[in-house]
Length: 202
Image 1 (cartoon, rainbow, N blue to C red):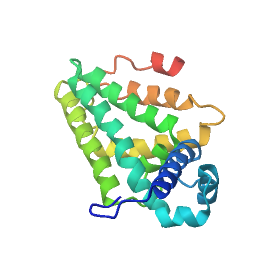
Image 2 (cartoon, rainbow, N blue to C red; image 1 turned 135 degrees about the horizontal axis):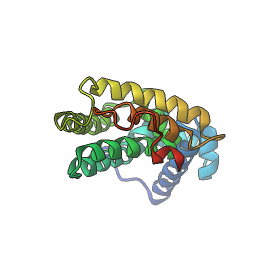
Image 3 (cartoon, rainbow, N blue to C red; image 1 turned 30 degrees about the vertical axis):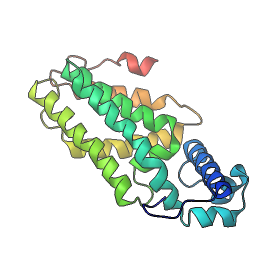
């Protein structure tokens, strides 16, 4: 609710909460293009009630995703706190794609498949600013190849989102194998070249 807005009546507040819960579940299960009519049906309200509270699909995103994207910041903070910068880098990457693989809506949001508000974009930006610190730390320690840049991570997020989106129903762990090969090629010393890390065999 916007600052200074008139408080909702109890029944209206309940409807709004039911709509948010239904939308969060539907987006996670089906992606950000989940039909609004089905969200209304799941919440037990009319489509008119849905539009009264959330005039656009993006209005749902504005409420749901800043909090969810906070998980990305927590993953990054854990990675930066790791004593080993390579372990921190790998932990961040694995955590990022686990978020995407377990939540279709998050996968769509991080791949920017739908327009997002400035608030949601700011939450994404904070996470990726921390990612830049994780990348630079690993490069400074000589464990991550020097030519890897933050823009390469953005490209990887988009590419892996496609893998996750296409394989989630038929091979939900396929992304782990792809990610393991990618990480194998990113080590500066290439000591793991030619092997598939344990992550891919889980």
